Image (cartoon, rainbow, N blue to C red; front, side, top):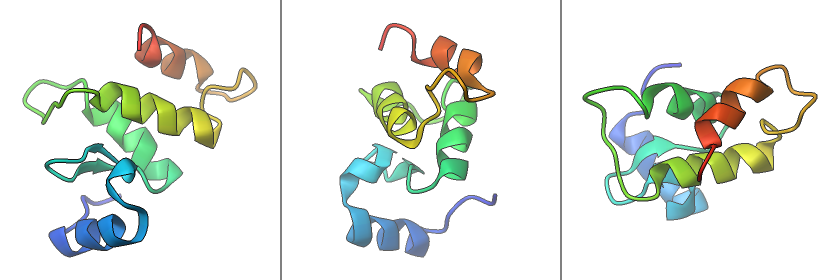
Length: 86
């Protein structure tokens, strides 16, 4: 999935509010779909990417709502490691 443009980010902001971004001040890592939540998990820990206070927590909270942290989900162990200690 390609990175969202500024117009797409603003559309998400108008529709959902700042709660749908892992880093709401920069409008980074939109969390409006399952694909974008998975993408945020993949990119957030990498070197050289934008980090913000509470970003990992917001990603984990949204992932839990979408069902990524259920034990019957195939990627459960990866999500559990990512969200440990949050």
